[in-house]
Amino acid sequence: MYNSVITSENRFNTTYALINWIHSRNKEVSGNIQQILFSEMDEWHQDKDGCLRHTSGKLFSIQVIHVETNLGSVLSWD
Image 1 (cartoon, rainbow, N blue to C red):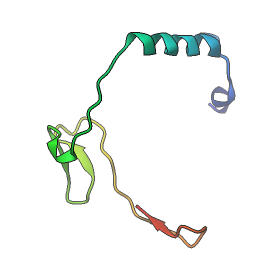
Image 2 (image 1 turned 90 degrees about the horizontal axis):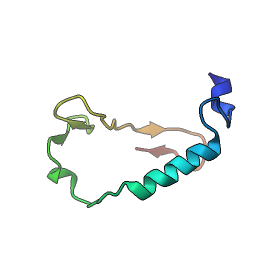
Image 3 (image 1 turned 45 degrees about the horizontal axis):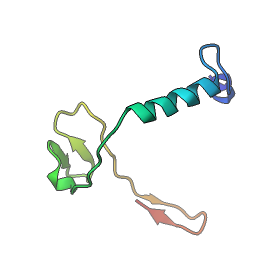
Image 4 (image 1 turned 90 degrees about the vertical axis):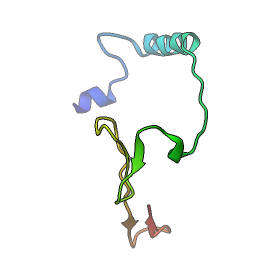
């Protein structure tokens, strides 16, 4: 697994070919992004623990965590 992570080339595609493919996809695919409030999103909610979840339970969720430490200049964050 580690060798896969540090390898810049593979037997299927070169890095150059992959970058060219990404550029071609960027030219062919368009999107429209509109910022809305979380409360306006269909079928998404915030649970009692503060986690963001889809009502189907099948999509990703965003877990809320709180970290406290005595290392570094920032001692806690969410």
